[in-house]
Length: 107
Image (cartoon, rainbow, N blue to C red):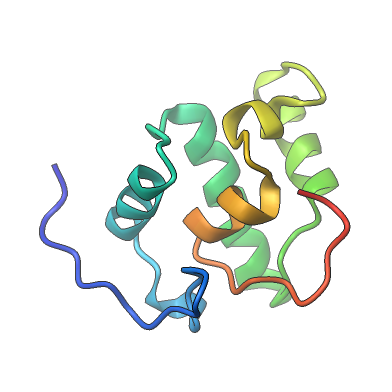
């Protein structure tokens, strides 16, 4: 069980204003708000997104996350959307602590 988590500054839709404020405990809180119980497949996606962001300073396109999951565990091409049923931007990006993309055609 995570310790008490202080909610960092977010925009009006719940996305972090500063991705550096993210933690795994915060991800669990954000996931609960989205009615998602995080399992190992979720964590594979989230940790990949965080690593990609740390390296490139941009949010990875959903195609990169899909490829990472396929290479790591297999599964369907739609696994990201099975894990995050309301969309990559709405749920995966939010839970992974990304800022909301200004314009995005996926999720």
